[in-house]
Image: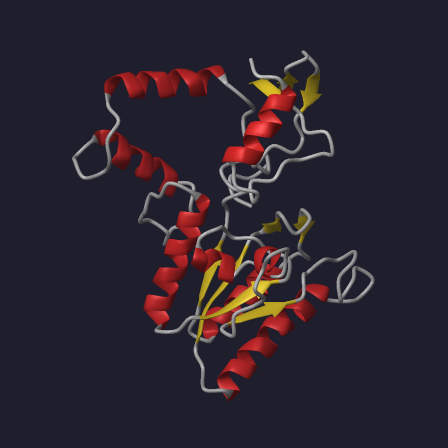
Length: 258
């Protein structure tokens, strides 16, 4: 096993600087199991930060399923196979009635990129509403709608077709929990953006949002904000893109989706 010093030296030589490390003294992690990570010196760490956790590290059922399938077949979707349609059937049973067609992708970034392409094709517009602090991926298209990226270190700022609304944070935001109807007040920020687009003879393409803001700080929005905001966008002819990459598939515990 390489020493921590040698790993740092080789990273500096071979790994791009944008692949950042955490902590002033980076950890040399060699194993994961359940909710724990283990360092090269044997120290056990409770993993509360590893990217988009779900059922923990090296879950035996997940490992067994991967091993079984890889020993049998690993190919793309251009052939007939029962697994893809069975999975699509089971997945759509977890969705609202009218969401019944699947497009399978390889990552969250690719999923949001595809959703943006579909919205822009449907509306013949690229005008997009986003929430301040939001992150939706690392492709060119998803960085363009991610204030977390374009307003962060190395970012180029917001494109002229992307319109930010204030983060609907009931504790630190523009409108707070001691205000009446703060959900509607934040939804009115969406309406103001829609009115501005209409005045400029521009069509909104989409409003993209996570149901719980992830990289922006794990923010729980005021109740009914998303319902009110998405309704306004749909009435204006645009689409609402629900980004469930970090919070969906049972991660919130009580519900399958955020």
